[in-house]
Amino acid sequence: TVEGPGIPAISPRVSFILPTGHREFTRDSFGMQFNLPVSKQQGDLAFHGNAGLTWYPRASADLFDNDPERVSLMSPHISGSTIYRLRPMLNLMLESVLQFEQLPTADGGKTRETIFTLSPGARGGWNLGEHQLILGAAIPIVWIESDSSAGILLYMSYELPFGRQ
Image 1 (cartoon, rainbow, N blue to C red):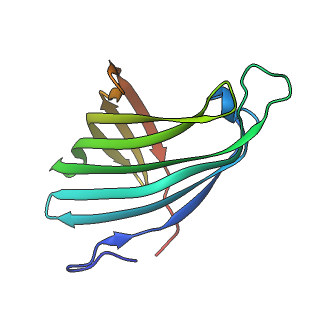
Image 2: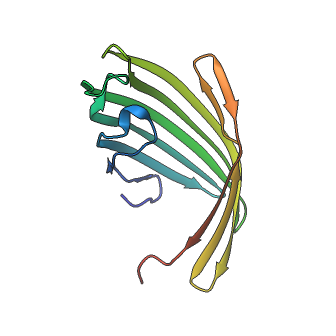
């Protein structure tokens, strides 16, 4: 839906996941992700929320065997962010994600990890004719069960116009 007075923008989506080497158990497994993002802007503040799940219907269950057993893994997640427009093309951001990631065990079973990420950051942009150059930085802090880690995320995006009015 399109955002309006008292109405948030809602944009359900389904994404297909191609096999990658990101995690051992998903290397040769297709997957799907279902998301229900909701956004609302109030003046210089924007609020975003998302609920969904990632599903691997045939993930590798036995990581130590040449002929692995397959298991269906479902990992729900919820996330939210607040973005403050400090200037027209400069935003301060605070994003968070709570995941309940289901993982295969070596004996063919399943286990679940709770992962929480809190990521403060900022992004700025410049208009270059009809294009935009976006630079951003964040400090994601990740808690997995009783362990934590932090990092630095830097990104650049060169954005082209999307369609004509």
